[in-house]
Length: 438
Image 1 (cartoon, rainbow, N blue to C red):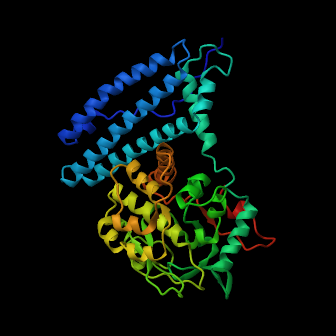
Image 2 (tube, rainbow, N blue to C red):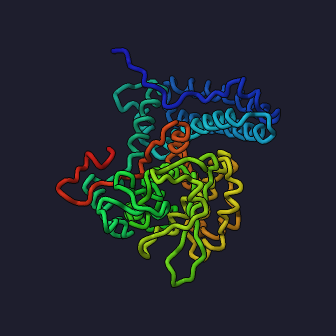
Image 3 (cartoon, one colour):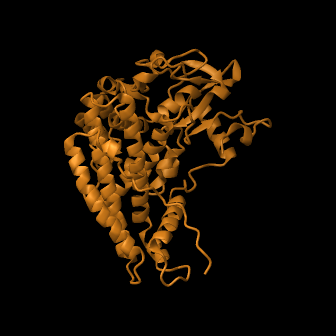
């Protein structure tokens, strides 16, 4: 038999270096030490099962899940200890942010593996049983290849991405919906946040709820019927035409849009609240406008059409959860300014309460204000599958939080997958290749 090529493992073992452990309070160091010892036993069990000649594929997967949960528990303790050391002034901010973000990336990768096993368990078991003709496959080798392949297959957007022409048509609809085209310059579009027209190359169509969440998760989160997730993603109300310099910051949750109380017969009104103080003096457009210029400022629209309240509520919730979790500079003061539970309640509810709370739990000891959660959520079905809800929360964490965290670590302002550059309006000069990222 020819020598097999060993695929790169799905994830490296998230070992917590001793020098990192030494930065933690004694309580967390002791708890991590206990988990490390049991983790060594789990790794031995996984290794033994991976080469067993018996039909132990199911036991192997169960042991892998136990190993994943053990490592995630270690990393949550690490995060708790890092946060405590930082708050006590024993850990510099730069070190805290670097170590904390690194540990969260590892947690997100573990969540990827856990979700993939749970979603594709039977397919993985069938493959481990020797679908390639081997009577006794090396399960560790097969597992790395199979789980990686299954995750790639199950995390595709399943038709959520549109063709270039469909995106152009959607962009045209948005410009009509928001009356965004400058009557004096057809290639100039209005941004309601900066309150200015700008050349189409400096504007983008930004999704509020990203298509990367997946249709089923979107339907469940918003309490919508089956097979409506695709429609939700591409509704005009789930997008804003904004300055390109704002899109990445919005996507990362550096600022949120919150409601201003209005009469029932009035169009909804919105204002910005900056969550990340480090951006306050950053210029985001050729205006020039800084983020400080838009903090607390009401948006200005050209007609009565507005983005959907529930979509902006979702963006607010996820942004606050991330800000709390990563101790974004200035988030505490901003959260007070953005605490508008009574106003949200006027129009709510919007999201499934149990899933929103589970997302905070999955992120790790992260909660939204109780009055805010009560104002904007619905209870849902009491017979919900708790394990399924945990899986959905992990999928949202991986797809919504981890990519943004990775972009935080970059010097440049990477564009979001949920943002479309502005094409020319439908004309013979319009080019999909020129106007849209692949």
